[in-house]
Length: 208
Image 1 (tube, rainbow, N blue to C red):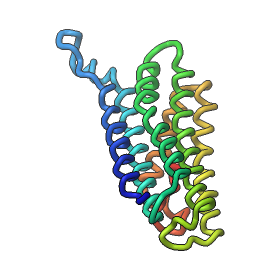
Image 2 (image 1 turned 30 degrees about the vertical axis):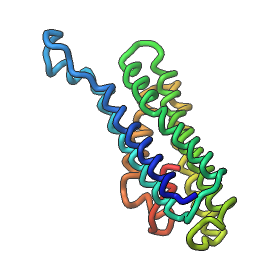
Image 3 (image 1 turned 90 degrees about the vertical axis):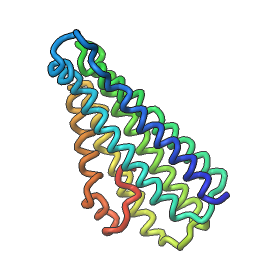
């Protein structure tokens, strides 16, 4: 199968997931209090929205970079791609969970841990998807990729999961630490410096 249908379907899932994020930001009911106060009270929703929006945007860029290497895909790559899209599809739920419980007095630690775990899961699946492409199915690539280069890409990708693992653990100390780590990762991976880990080329493993 060519990559065109896979990328078209994947783009649709990314677009839906990134659009659903905004549904957690509500217009305050008239008469419920000062508009300014009610808007400020939703700051966890704004923060979680921005972080998840940037993260999904980056994984979309990485997805394009990874699959542009291929001239065709086989069944195994299709399955890995579906698993990746599944991990992306749960981000609107975990983002909403984090935003809602960050304002509560109980459950906020577990909500933050689930939020961090969703990021970690997405990253790990992307690493394994890249491994399937670069190591298991190199014959499907448009151009030959040297084994050492492939290993470097995967090594850089695997290291990128450490902050998310830390975010999950620290969620039980403070949910704000989890939010801060995920925000720092989003900002870092949005910068050009993130691609330097791959020799200055197009980064398809920054978040994964």
